[in-house]
Image (cartoon, rainbow, N blue to C red):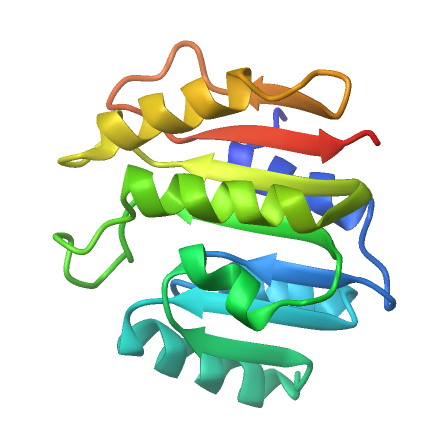
Length: 182
């Protein structure tokens, strides 16, 4: 069976993560990606602007006995204020927190700042997975801004790929994958 974009994002990042690596969950949400990264990386920095996300993720990590995560109640655009090491892998789930206030969404301006800062701290061979959920108010603007930004990346420094359903209705999410070449 063909992999869904979110599963491919995890496979893509798992290939480069090990117990010496630093990872960033730029959009903590319910903690699914945070837990995934924490299982593989030495240290994970997880960001969200909603207290509910931090609380849920904290509870999940405690249940699983994972203590290599720093949960940060701040926007992902502030990543460089919290992460000083080189980053091996980062993941974004753009959109809104499921089962929460759907008016609180990721925004193009802060998302692009976060992507730019993470790419600047990405080690050679490091990867960024960006899941784009855009079936909500403002989602198309963010989708277009991210795609435009990624298409402008220097191809001698980064390779970027797109993985998306072609015959699905209702704006299915898709994955943008970036790897630093040099």
